Image (cartoon, rainbow, N blue to C red; front, side, top):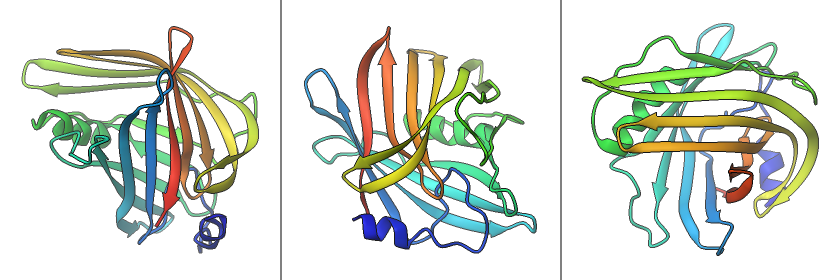
Length: 218
């Protein structure tokens, strides 16, 4: 599988820390660390690419299924980002992604505007990233996502079932809140250029809770 992961890396522009390949599907599995059970299976692929001149716009679609193969949410969810062709810096559209995720989870249209998050391609250990304050409204209801304490811990070459990848390791504190939902976690993620994350660990109250790992590339 390593041969596949290296072969699909070739691009005509500088790569950033996001998935930028059409006709490629990444397959992840998230497991509960305490008992080893599967929390969900997750596939992501690029559904649209737009050339904006100095930038490339990528829209990816994520689908989540339970261990028994049944859909976890009401619909697939989409993520949106722009990548600078010369630098590889990524700008994530948090608002559009948040709206899509709320639609996927609860089946209701939400409204959110103007929330962006940058992810430079030149990150090094010790660097920090700006905090992200995301908010979406569904009628009188408000959903919030706050991501703080974002920092690059180290560089690390990591082996996962899908292959071996050179990564930066990023830690962040994420709090999600809304009607009937609250989650407070510290995430540690391994990011590889051209793919995005290949491993994503979540800690609750200092204890490793779940680990999501890239299992295959198709």
